[in-house]
Image: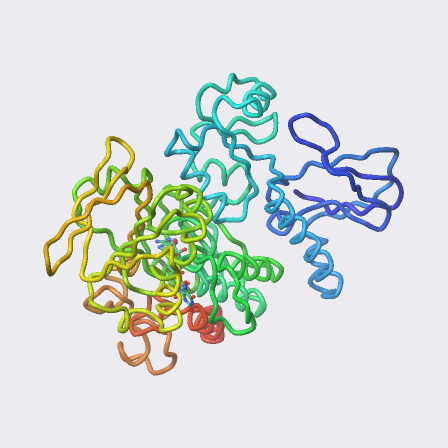
Length: 496
Ligand SMILES: Cc1cc2nc3c(=O)[nH]c(=O)nc-3n(C[C@H](O)[C@H](O)[C@H](O)COP(=O)(O)OP(=O)(O)OC[C@H]3O[C@@H](n4cnc5c(N)ncnc54)[C@H](O)[C@@H]3O)c2cc1C
């Protein structure tokens, strides 16, 4: 959206994108303004509005309004606060122009749903063949008998991938060879987003690129309880989303889904190539690509991925666990948190742990809560040895490693949470990695100037991807924040 619209006289109403009817009882009057959070990034609006009567407005071009907002922080805070509240209301009420028809029947649509949900994009999932899905599909000129993604009645998304939906909403930026930023931040987890906030605040032209969803691993945690300032906990997705808005306010741009596949040094800059073939160059790079879950070597695991085997326990997966037992493999904090979260919706949660206790692998407060929850059963010294079902997972076999006894559990959802490996394949040969693939920084690679400098001047690494890092949200945020002063020094030196 390229204009900020402020009402002087008249009335503006929010309308339903499919019926054209007024969607909300309340409307905007003089002194209020149109718009939503996508205004900050120039993305497409998801909440259509129109004048309900003769209306007089002031229009300000987007980039001029952003400049004004940067100059008057008090005004900026009010506008951003209202935009964020509008998005939160949409998410809570399920008010969405983006509709997914037949998510349950289609793995492709489930990927779109995951992308939308984890990136705080309001969408509504409609059952294939339901009256609502047929009406929405007909409004778009399709019959609605096959899974589809539609956006209002004007857009049917062809080949509905996360990238296609992102393009439609303006989240997936187009780059050309000549594009250059001061700093490219690879990874949109807590470390990358914190770096985005500080880089923008320090006046660097910064771009954050993210493979899947802003939030990273933290975005899959329903409740982070040990982050300072949130005594009752905060969902990781919420925390990092706030950071994203804050970074956008300072001018940092975000683009997703974009996976960096290679990085090379070219004429004094670093050029990153993405999985879609596009590339962008930067004076400096901050590596914040974190880690990803390990997979298990289990027969038919791949076939069941997305059909009963999952690697994160977010709201979406919790839905698949309703009135079924859920099985979680792993004895760490993420497995423990997932067990607590899923026990609210699942009939019973089975936590499968290789060790004899949780003492060495899980925080004490969490293991005590698991022990006290009657809906959680811990299978110690055990492992899952078989996955059964025709197309969707229906049963797993749990074997006791000591007694060799086997037990079949009927379940439609198994979660694998067995540790993680760093996302550093794309850096091989460019910076020094340790034996497990984590990026070495500071004294580990002879860099005395910054604990986050890698063996290649101009490339910095922060958060979980860094060798020896503390794998926590607070430390990732801290590292992403403090690295920027050294990046700034480097970029400034580079320009001279
Ligand atoms: C379920 C769960 C619960 C947790 N609970 C807590 C908790 O309660 N308290 C706590 O302190 N910590 C918790 N943690 C740990 C915490 O979330 C991590 O330490 C933190 O997210 C690390 O942040 P990061 O930015 O370094 O990396 P990540 O969060 O891993 O983010 C890295 C991002 O980089 C992206 N990426 C990877 N490769 C590429 C590429 N080539 N190109 C572009 N993008 C790429 C990934 O998609 C990802 O979004 C939890 C973790 C999990 C999984």
